[in-house]
Image 1 (cartoon, one colour):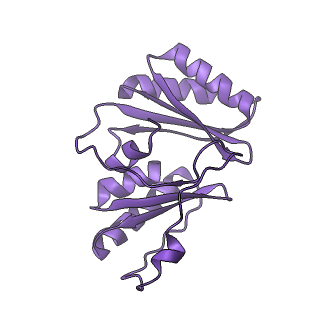
Image 2 (image 1 turned 90 degrees about the horizontal axis):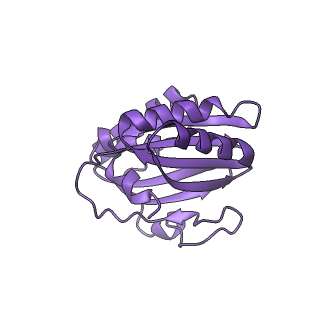
Length: 185
């Protein structure tokens, strides 16, 4: 979500589809003018580098006719991670979000539960979801005003060590439309 937010805030692109893979990771498929897609890819690389996570950002100019059948995945549901592995965002909102989204990703349930308990006890935030990503990776998504989310994420991530492994923790102020469309309803 952090990478998607950076891409959408950098260029005029539209999310066509996201697809979870086995890494664990996500393939984000975008549409837009070639210059915008290239700018978005550069923003994705910069965001991933800042978080010290690997990324492969690749642009295919003018995809060949007939290739859609290969890159467009059918909707599905993965029972192991208890969620769809393919999403087609509904970009129905056209206004700037007046809240922040926080993410705390851990490896291990105990660490995730401790992190979210601490976050909720620290600040006035709302839990939007707990998403299993495979390989024991769990992401907790919270919502609230920027200061509260930042305080909650900082407090939550501090309680992960010793119970599991902190993979990432991030705050997205005023999330982009693509991020909003992927948040659990």
